[in-house]
Length: 386
Picture 1 (cartoon, rainbow, N blue to C red):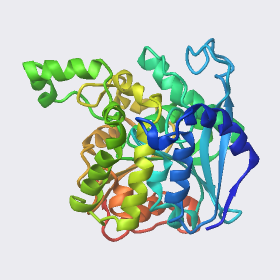
Picture 2 (tube, rainbow, N blue to C red; picture 1 turned 30 degrees about the vertical axis):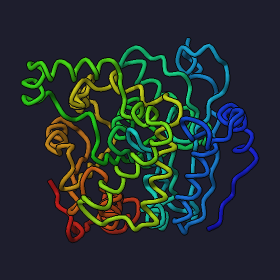
Picture 3 (tube, rainbow, N blue to C red; picture 1 turned 180 degrees about the vertical axis):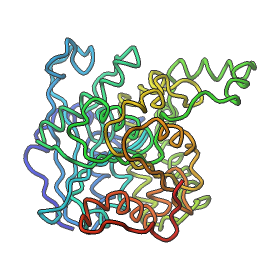
């Protein structure tokens, strides 16, 4: 597969790589990972993709121009970078920007890049503090600051890439960030695609009952301490890769809700996931500021539905643990076109579980950009409209 990795990428990651390599070779370190490991694991995973792409580290500066803080409350003026991959496409293709979810990175879309790049100019990023992007110290202390960390860094990335009038797709937590971005900067987004998005649920009776028990109280205290799953992976040291291998094998092979991964896919994804999870804690620490225990949003998107300005498509797997009923409630309050599509044989990672169904849903959501001469188009076979 053709790749073009320029000098800017090498230079921008040099400082992080030097620090992370240290004196000891990785095989002798307790946590066998580094910035170089992440980028190399990404290359190996994306070797499964046939479409040529360019990988770059986009400089977003040290903080938004109108902010009194750097990314955020960091004493360093060091510039930050967003790891970005752009796939080759036809010149007149609409731009599709893809944003990953929590505990993930852009490589999770490896099964989708070829199909989507046949119709779109596909650009996928690692959010600030995730994957191969910069990992500043996370010192946010409120929901507002934490949202700004992701939304403002994305806006600085957009400026650096000189993008506008694009389709924005976000998965899970990435859907939450994409929604917040579209609320703040609707002039740049022509369509919003939210894939199993977080943030549209409201407090459930089940969580309320659990919190009234001693077990719920303990679990809530752990949550409020900002204990993340990644800490377990780091704590396991050299046994961390084995734990991640068990997870990916169980989720995407043994107990998959759709099309299981091939052995080569599973191996490369496992390697990639381990290095992105075991690296320095940064963006992952957003968890308790964005969600309360039970993944309930502290700033529910349902409360902002009436302010929506961008036409939106929701996509859910039939077995997605994110309930599409929250999207139905939001749609009632929206004053823009909104549709909800459900994909069979798929769970929360609908784009991995059922790639072809997911691609059909995305193409259908963007039909007015891909086939503007067609007034109507029937729902693709297998998809359900909620």
